[in-house]
Image (cartoon, rainbow, N blue to C red; front, side, top):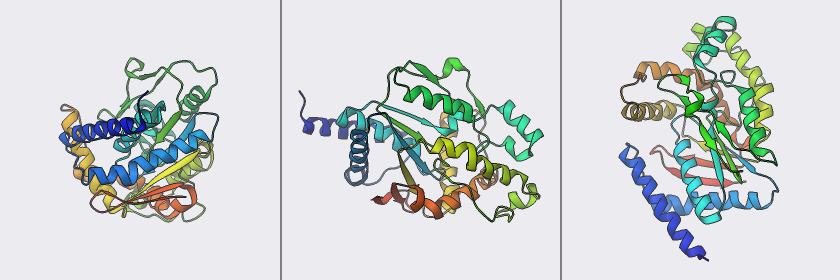
Length: 304
């Protein structure tokens, strides 16, 4: 039987190998060992303790502004939870549950033109998401496929390209920019940016989004056992880091369509209202808050 020390060394080696692969793709990581010791490993230890206290798969919600590094963090957590704690991890993004382009086109005609743009509550296939959680939590687990969304073509991939989940998970990590968000009680009618002012004059779009959060999304988020929130310094960094994200997408998408700087600026306006509200409300819904500084590095972590 391998020692815990051996597992710890193995997990660190795999962690550094993964970080190196990400740096090749254009992401820079500072203080790799410090981040491992101060944040990643303690966070995994916390998740393991939650798992030990439950008799079912544990659902971990992970949210944060666009470009905050959610996908990378989830992959690191999977490595450490698997090696050090022998836990089977299934992770997926709410982004992979976006409605198809055709479905959003119908929404844009029937409800509001802004629903053509993916991202906000209302543009996800909640029915498919519910079915997925049901399959993951079912006692008599059967293998199934997770959907996959391709942002470079702005559409869901065909089922033959979906990811197969073969074994029942111990840990389910559900990540997404709005995961855990609550609806707003007031100030819905008052626009907060040019997009809302010019393109949603009657506030139909944002009222619909808010109602989706209040009803359909709340039912999904109530399934979460523990919520992790990545707190960015301010919303302006969402734009800055989303630009970097788009540059990375351009490198790996082999000539597929990506957004220009102006398109990104308009795009994140769709996310601004809820993102800012989550920055205000994070103490209410998050069990773990990780502050990210202006250099895109974990600064401090608080576990409630």
